[in-house]
Length: 225
Image 1 (tube, rainbow, N blue to C red):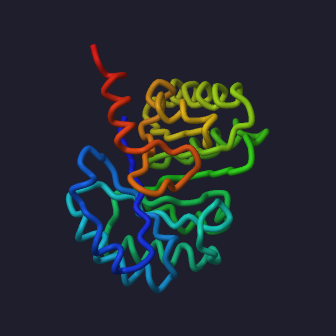
Image 2: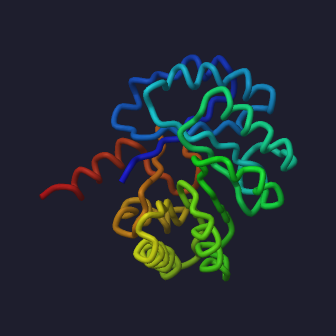
Image 3: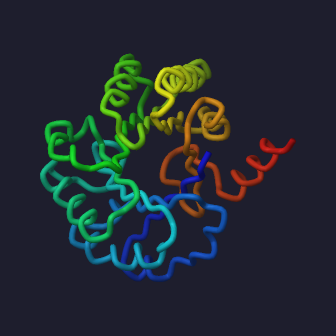
């Protein structure tokens, strides 16, 4: 299981002052670009990709529809994704499938997509349909994050992930229940069939994220013989 840590600079100056040495033990960097305006994203991109050269990078624009900070039309969304991909070729590109489904056909030439779904309010009743549809599209990664209301919903998401992974062993999944209630899903992500877990260095990018230091300690304990 790989540890993903988001970075969320709010300016070029913040991006330039990121201390890369603090990311020791991090497998993947997620650049949450939605803390910037559309024009600022393009201006800050060189600093991000130069600073984290040698790291795997996920380029993510988390829009306001799915708990992010940037409001874009679907055309603006994919235009920005294409511009960054053409110049910098990030290892992964997060695509909010259900928020921008009408333009997904324009993304079929991308082999590095993380098809994502985020629900900050609840576990949707059609969660199995969401798993099934995203898996059928065979992206690089299926990412699902929900806000559980009960312990059973946390266990259900883990169980669904394990089930879909068992049926589709070649497909990569990253699923998590958010908030304090869902923290176990982040700690035991690999047990459920997830390939990634998300941890925070300074500011969490989602409720319930565990600090990088704590995540590394817990992983060491879990991986002991």
